[in-house]
Each structure stands twice: as C-alpha cells, then as structure tokens.
Length: 302
Picture 1 (cartoon, rainbow, N blue to C red):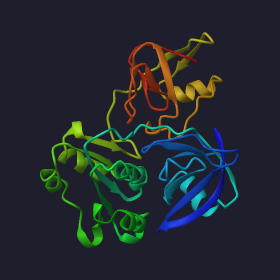
Picture 2 (tube, helix red, strand yellow; picture 1 turned 90 degrees about the vertical axis):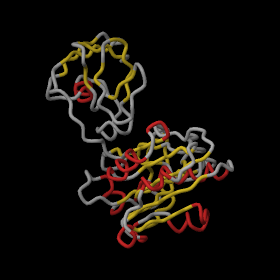
Picture 3 (cartoon, rainbow, N blue to C red; picture 1 turned 135 degrees about the horizontal axis):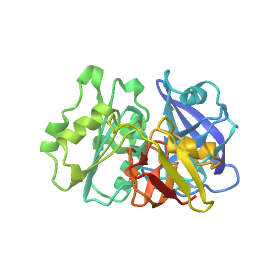
Picture 4 (cartoon, rainbow, N blue to C red; picture 1 turned 180 degrees about the horizontal axis):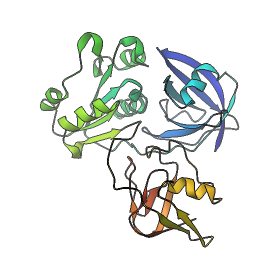
C-alpha cells in the first residue's frame, strides 16, 4: 500500500467529486491509462477508482467518484465525510483495461465512465494518433470534466446530453468508421451492450463498473489446498472461496467482491477453476471473490 494525503476535493459535476491524492512520503507508483487503485477508506471499506489524472505526475493521483444513494457506503463517505488533509492508503495501480497500440482510436464514455477514458484520449493525442471521443450523459451538468475536455480537445470531443439530444446511434457511427479504428468503451450496461452490438468484438475493448448478469450452475462445495502451508480448507456451497480463506486465517486482499477489480487474484497450482469474473483471469490465476471450482479440489499458491 501507498500512503497519500487528500490535497484537493473538487466538485466537478452534479454528485461527482474529484480527489487529488498527494504521496505522503514521496513519488507514487507509476501507472498507465486504464489503471485503477484500491482506496482504503476510514470507514473500513475498500473501493476501486480509475485513475484519471496525468500518468507523468508521480506526485499525485486523481480519481473521481459519483454519489450513489444506494451504494454500500463508499461514495457516501467520499462525498459527505472526507476532508482535505486526511491520510488515505491506496494500492499499487492495477490495469485490466490497458490502451493497446492502434493506428486510430474511438473512445466512448458514459457518465463516470469518462474516468479511465480521459487519460487514454490524452495519451493518443500526445502520441499524435488520430482519436475522437463520444461522451454521453443525461445532462451537461452531470458530466464530469466536460469543460476540460472541450477546452483541451475541441472538435475531437462530441458531448451528447441525452435528455436534449437522445442517445447516439452507435450502429450508424460504426458504419462510418475506418476499419482500422480500435474502440474503447466504459459506461453503464446499456452503453456497453449497444457498443457490443455495433462494433466487431476484435476491435472493441470494454470496462464495466458492475458485473454483467450471467447464469452459472448451482454452487457446490469443494476443497481448497494452500500449497505453502499444506492446509486444506473446505469451501461450502453457501460461502465464497474468498470468505472461506479469510475465515481460515488467510487474509486475501479484496475490494469489489464482484469480480471486476482484480484485487483478490490468486495463483492456481492445480485443479480447474470456474471463472465467474468480468475481467478475464489469465492462465493459472483466478479471482477468489466470485470464482469457484469445476474440480473437487483446487491447489492454491498460499
């Protein structure tokens, strides 16, 4: 973990605050567009936020959070109780949404989904790669960084306030796109579904803040063997692997507990995991908060 100090709290849209976090003991860990951090809050919650500042600035991280009345307490704390000067621990950056090299880009952002997209657009412009952004929100007042984007990037940015203009036709946009264009999209589930219907899968990269609704076979019990400690843990059908490990004395890191942040990644030595995450676990890895086992036993590097 890295220790930071809350240097600024800025209201950047209706119900959206931006936090500037300065390293408390020196430069912060480097990051690239698409990365996020875990933020450990004083109310014992850990939440994930995309980095939306300048990767060249090693002194500060910038994140933004929308107030969610039905949240589990993270956004409420940031909006109502956090104050300048507070010390907060943050994780090293992780990136499950990296910006891959491409001859040209189209960026699509919906609401707070602008946060990972903002540094991507800046990076493409700095590298003199043709890029454009379609930024969608209900009203201009609810869209963070809209003024910053228009002043910095002008005609490269199309801002769509849906209450006045309706939703953009992504299928029509796709029909006019150069075939070499790579598309990055982050926003609500409806936008991601529209993008997946409009653009070829091989040219579309998406990130979602909440897991997609999917169906799996009924949960069944299995064994988790911790290879380093030789401990065998029974994982019952009504408990996640993460919960079983924590109850057995293995303090596995966790954040979202929904399979979208990657903080609970484990190495699988033997056995066949059932991947239920939305990230796409690499070979030999799994995310303990949601994924289970297709084999009777999993051997983990713990």
